[in-house]
Figure: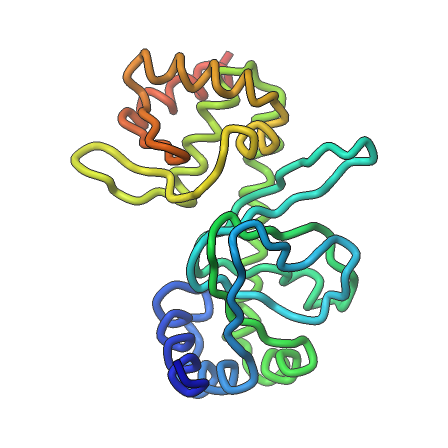
Length: 238
């Protein structure tokens, strides 16, 4: 694929899948002209906590996890990203170092634009700035939902997590079923929930026995979203 072909594809994907789709055509052309498409292999670290916040990453294909590592070397998963997600928007806006690690869960393509090229566009185009603000708002809402679930009992916490993942990463898999479109392991899910892999595995098995979900490899298919919501809401109401 030539550079020109890659840029055309990047623009199409930005228009179809990212919050930047609201930008006028000339703004998208300017963004694409100044950026580049980068590919990452599964397991590759895209950037690390403390590295320079010098670029904005827009995921075009694949999926990512955003993590931190505690002082006792324990991984904490802060969130997951699907195509269209903006990554590193906080650091690129204020120029501070990265606040987390970002790792590819599978082979990915990303569009990267450096801060020095992005800031002039943002200063002269409110639509592009509002698009980034929308991305930040989505991230804050997801973080709030995750924090809220931390005080729940295990089943309710897992149910609330699956409901939120369906809302953010769900893809219809058939009549009345939705697949969580992320290549995550039970360990990743446990690190996201603050639970052990064994606890997550046991809870997912309970959900499977109840007909709420089924698993296919690393994929979780939700069969009864209302049932999961009821489990989560029962504890919130109690």
